[in-house]
Length: 266
Image (tube, rainbow, N blue to C red; front, side, top):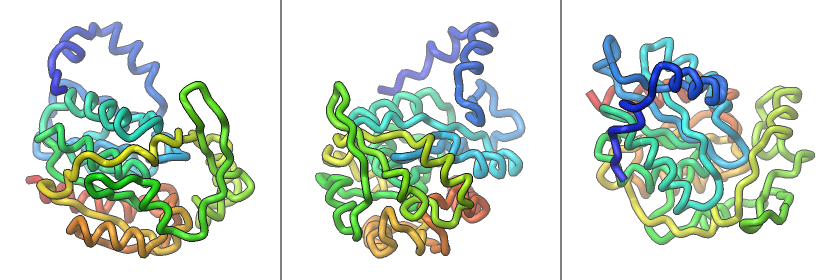
């Protein structure tokens, strides 16, 4: 899956302009040269369910200010196997060392995707799922209580689920102001149920050092479940009083953990 060549070489200046226009606001596109940032790895951010790449905006701002090249990848949220292959294809197009960061379900994706790319030098889980081989996100989610209030929608490729908007703030973003939480609820991206029923196939946290930020006020993934997964993975852990939307409510803490991991790659 490591096809490193044509996409970067073949793009013309005009093609790059069109591509840039198609990328969601806030997404940092990698360029061929690393110049002054040669010593710093590229930070790749993968969002989870009921969010999108824009949720990383406050963290991206801080990372860029500190001189890190940043990329975000739009997680399809369709099935762990397919989402892993999708993220892996984008990792293959990035030159040099990578710090791979996953929030929530994105943690399961990076656990699998990193196994295909030896350039991934550190994994960072932000309130993230860290499944063992053969384990599903659904099995881990079932350890949290009470269950998340979800709304199901039949779609051509199965069933999509989203958080009931009336309960979104209390579940996902309790420490975010009400207006922002309402906007997040309205913009949330549903996840296909196959995202939680596909079994994890890899354990990239075994060969790759990992960091985990545990959110003590999380009502989407219970803090005790986060601790269990982090300890099992042997992750360097930090804890913060924050909701599941910690990258929005506490972006400075998230950035600190990512940069700790990045420094370990030098």
